[in-house]
Amino acid sequence: MRYTLQSGGCAAQVETLGGELVSWRDGDGAEYVWGGDPAYWSGHAPVLFPIVGALKGETTAFNGFSYRIKKHGFARRMEFRLELLEQDRAAFVLESSPETFQSFPFRFRLRVVHTVSGQGFETAYQVENLGQETLFFCLGGHAGFRCPLGEGEAFEDYRLTFEKTEQTGFLCTDAEGILSRDDRLTPDWDGRELPLGYEMFDRDVLVLEQVRSRAVRMQKGPGGPGLEFHFHGFSSLGLWTPPHKKAPFLCLEPWQGLPAFADESGAFETKPGVIRLQQSGVYSAGYSMRIKK
Image 1 (cartoon, one colour):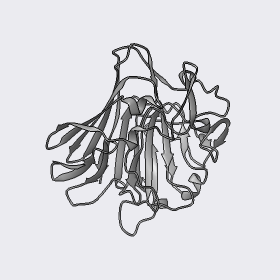
Image 2 (cartoon, rainbow, N blue to C red):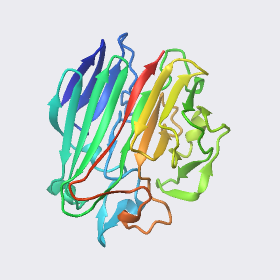
Image 3 (cartoon, one colour):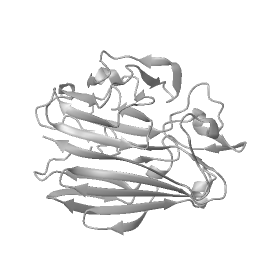
Image 4 (cartoon, rainbow, N blue to C red):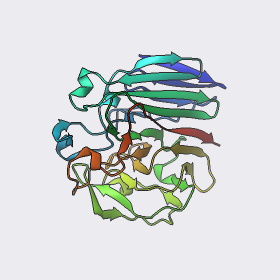
């Protein structure tokens, strides 16, 4: 089910399927969130839980037992319960169930809270360990934004400006979505300003492991209009638009955890970046978007 949130003349839409924010329009009616055209990608801004990216053979092991989890996890495909609905805020909850136990043998509560304002929106994640053993999981955002934002503009007119200087090499995945520690793409950039081009994404997602910045701006040209994206509780950042489609959007994906590496053992608890949450523990993370005109 879909709900409308409003604040400061702006409007957003959120839905129970995946607990996802699917639209945010400014006071002039301009849309910033990707609309989900299935010809390119049917998503908008899904939550990635309990894994980020792909596993080798879609399989991992918990306590020596094998489980199958599809790419980016099951949360984005499940119905959440509406916990709170206010004019400018909505909270959705997904809890462990017999269905989730089939692929993930832990008791958990995942809460997603969307708050809108006249200048943007915030998405907050909270994971609670409801079990008696350590909860192992990964968590990520996958926020899709229209790019270009204006009519008559091109994807290549835009650039990403990072808050801090980053490593210039990006981790890349193979055709099965698996990472290699020695395979990096190094575009022509200085670690702060990254001009966008579709050819950069021919290998699919680009991953900044151990990203230093907590903010990145997507804007038209140097100092032009666009949006600013802030995130916390995540150690990596993925950049993605579907390869070879020239899709009019870009996903900014803050991650805690990574897709599988080719040399991983298959034991989930040893995955790079995995979160270890003790009994009754709570893990919080999130991101926000503000428009810049």
